[in-house]
Amino acid sequence: MGPWPAEPELFLYDESLLADGDRRNVVDKYRYWRHEAIVHDLDAQRHDFHVAVENWGHDFNIGSVIRTANAFNAKAFHIVGKRRWNRRGAMVTDRYQHEYHHPSIEALVDWATAAPAGGEAHGIPIIGIDNLPGSQPIETYDLPRHCILLFGQEGPGLSPQAREASVAILDIAQFGSTRSINAGAAAAIAMHAWVRRHVFDQPL
Ligand SMILES: C[S@@+](CC[C@H](N)C(=O)[O-])C[C@H]1O[C@@H](n2cnc3c(N)ncnc32)[C@H](O)[C@@H]1O
Image (cartoon, rainbow, N blue to C red; front, side, top):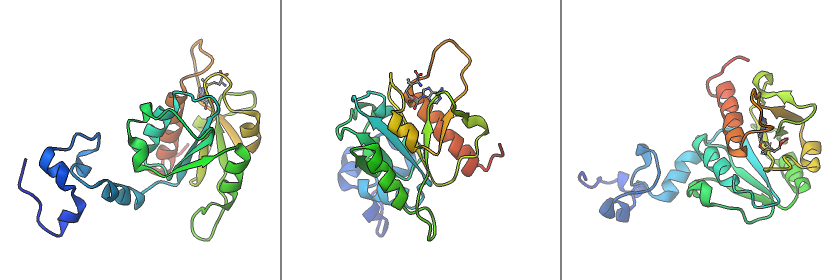
């Protein structure tokens, strides 16, 4: 371990981590940083997409979705349905994010309608992600900068209310025999589609 940092950097660092070592799963930039300092830094550069997951049956995939939302620095994540969710798969990544709970899709819609959408604008569209009759290919859809990507659960997929609330439902192309991919995998692909479009400015 190197020498302790001098002021004014010291406020960034956690003395106990400096003394005992930092075993957290964080990128090197944040090693030894105080938790609040990391969140503050992430807040300054969060992307304009939100992630929402329906939680009616404690789907174990939610943690994986939330971990990916952290990796792609989503603006916030939203749990729709039951408040408690299986955090194990999130690997503590939820603690670096902003979490909202909505007891129903109607409550999520109310939140989205009032949410800031850049400048003076309010209202963020909900984009459902599922492979359903009538869904459009995500590969050729121009994802809006401000949006909520809404994912369904193993088994039922997006609820009828979620489908109704979505301005569009986007599917990820599949070529094998399985009906669907894991929700965590689907969420990673959808978030990365947003990143390609809005961070790397990739044309469709
Ligand atoms: C395991 S799927 C179940 C629903 C699926 N519609 C079916 O027919 O079996 C659970 C969730 O994963 C996501 N998902 C899985 N495969 C997908 C795909 N090919 N395209 C878009 N989303 C997908 C969706 O959010 C979906 O609600």
